Length: 186
Image (cartoon, rainbow, N blue to C red; front, top):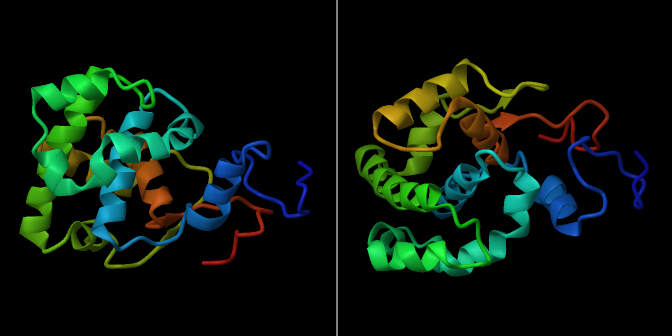
């Protein structure tokens, strides 16, 4: 594919969407250790279930507004009235099951923080703090294990494919494709 700037990128990056190109170039695969960002990305990945990441990414700013900047304390406190308001917000994906899951997942996220000291410590303990380099996969034994654990704790919309995408997004798994200008950057 021919890119305006001459760089070769992963096939999934849409050259006609500046938001997507920025995400590919600056965020995807970059290790994240900040719990706030890890929470935001987990919620967004859960909303991706059955949809494209591009769809979710295009609504990211609307999600940030709707979910109070992904303030964990506030999301944990959401009640039925707030959930109903989110279900009527045209800027986000208005799936009631996913919205309810976002709230309950936030509470479980918080309990993992309490157990491990941070969600980052929980997430990175699965690889002993190491980045996993692999390509052309949609799941792995790692995503299977993390998914199973999160489901056991009660999280929803955290199947192995969603968790694999999440692990890629937050840099636990580094998957830039062969020929991508970022293939060997991490």
